Length: 430
Ligand code: AMP
Ligand code: GLY
Image (cartoon, rainbow, N blue to C red; front, side, top):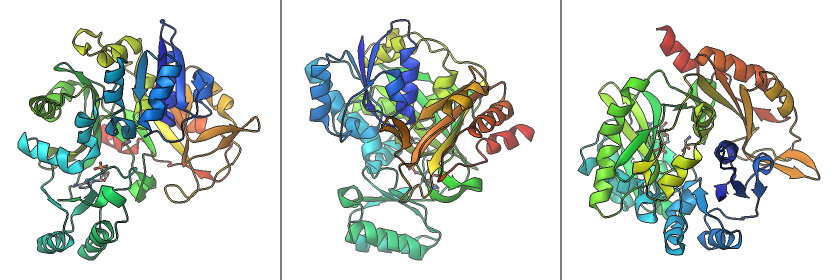
């Protein structure tokens, strides 16, 4: 079997690594990939992961049997539709169903329609109306660009003035381009966040163990929002026993709603939940694996993932085998370039990966994100550079192992959070 994974992050490395272990011995291609995926398969050039035409050219040229678009952009741009037309199985939803991530207004309206708990909200395209609405609210709301904005389209303002500035920038100055031509203004929620991911299709929902991401750049959840600075699984705040119930409450109504609209969802559905004083509420949907959540999740996946992914892509999830998960905890600590998520340093030499993995053989894996080979040497090329991922018998053991491994990494002009997992550990100690 010939598999093409589209994307270049730590999630893509984890997918290539995990699928490469399948007894089916698939041939794996990654476009464009990174310095780590090059060790798991063959990297192919792809300048823009949203370029469906180019992806389909590669699919044809390389006779791909299974396409795995890891990020949202190719899915929102219709790569699954193009695959359906070409008769190639694709692991992920068609464009009409990828709107759950591609349009926040669409997702919020479906949540409201299906009675699924979420923050109160209103949608605007007109600055004057949006402004009057914000001024009428007692507390500053969260402002979201409707469309895809590379993780930068959600602003949690500290006061009304800042909220109005964001609205002006999105609706008048068009700083987010067409993605910000429509905005969702929603009630700011308080609480801990947790990620609920599930394989979905043909009316079946197979929840994965819970995970918790760390979105802010610096320790104690300070600094700007990032793509994610670390994650662990399971998150004690969402125990195994609650997964089926949570999937029934937060994923099923939305999946049924999509089916009713004639755009059934298939692939990984990821609900970002906020556990508020009034119970859990949906913050957002993603139509793919989270990054970095994918890294600790796949470290815990003990069986062969390929039959499940292939069945889902072929529209036969109803007949797929259940995935198997280690009872251990896995944690991923992201090492990022200085400056990330703003302008960041590039080109630094990356060393110490073998030593990090050797620090606990079989229990540590360093996934590459922003790395590439330059002149025969591994160099940093992206904001998030590595994800040092470790397994342990509990969260504390996994955390200690990941940080001990990270000490071996030699990477100038980089930083990482030192408190990945501490909320979960504090929760366990209570
Ligand atoms: P999203 O991409 O919608 O998940 O938003 C990114 C991040 O912004 C979330 O992970 C939260 O940390 C934060 N956020 C989004 N919506 C809200 C909300 N209604 N209240 C508080 N924080 C939010
Ligand atoms: N870790 C959050 C995301 O992948 O969107």
